[in-house]
Length: 276
Length: 175
Image 1 (cartoon, rainbow over the protein chains, first blue to last red):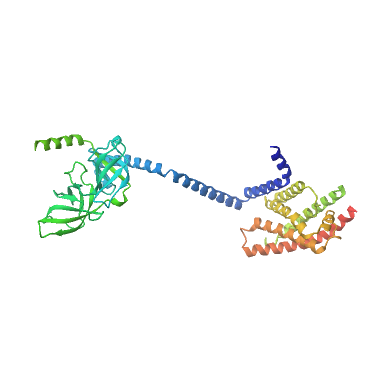
Image 2 (image 1 turned 90 degrees about the vertical axis):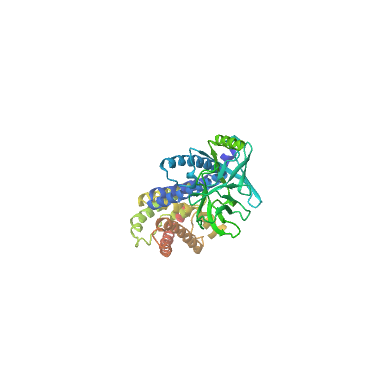
């Protein structure tokens, strides 16, 4: 303290000079319209830029939390939107086609994903604690991506559509077919539709969606669009290429479709398989 | 400083202020040439004068002029910058022997050329500061430079004249 006072005493004249200088500048800015405008605009610019920089810096470290919050908000909004669209019957988004009365949508982050193996899987960051059960449909905002298979308390292993054990029934241009959509290990962006007769009028560009025969997926969730259609001589079926709607290579967030009456359906299926 | 010296400095200040207000301030040539000489006595003040007092006198003088010209901050700012340079100019243009003499402002013992350079540097610094804040936003760079050069030159001629008149008086009074 004494040293500080000593310093002030020694530097008093210099400090006084600075004080008078700032006072002059203050008067100049205060009383002169031009300088007042310039000063205000410059200080505003500087403070805005400083605030922006500090905000950017802060938000960078909060990205993880922001992502999580957005995902949760998205989940709530999607559920709400589904409800509204059901009453108005106007589908806005592919996920809006999900029947809110039948399915509950659970958002999940993908933490592991394979696309180049013979049977591909991905792991999502939600498990039995979140109400996830085996054989629930998993979709992205573009289309179907797989089904849940093995469930841990916090994570779930999902069978990707790029898995030879995955099949589902297609609906092409609104018509249900008894054929199957399968992955034949020919690239991560296409599947093949089998067992559809040559008499079917299917052409390139037709929309392929999930059919109402599936208890896992909601009806009309996009699978992809029809690519090449080949009529083979050796049998009566068409070989239909289906270009996947979802990009399995860039899977970040997915939505698990939790069927509310799943137990009831499972019981019926079990009962029917026991009887036959 | 003796009482007599203070009296003469005060008279010099007052005369220059009157001359500044009633003559020079009315001689604005298209707002290009603005001659300021009222600060000259500050250059003649003894170098061993307490710096706090020097800054206080300079600031109050500038503020007073600002008040009358309704040009707040410009004169006081220019004077403060000039006072910051004063000691440096003094050391630059006068040798040690002369430094003792300038305490009494005896132009007879000073090298006239050095004295003129001392005045010229101070005048240019003052006018540059003044024009930078007074009208830099209204003039182009070349016009600004021209104004500074013309105003400084005119003010310098007047300053030399004033120095020749008053320094002798100061000297004789001191003796």
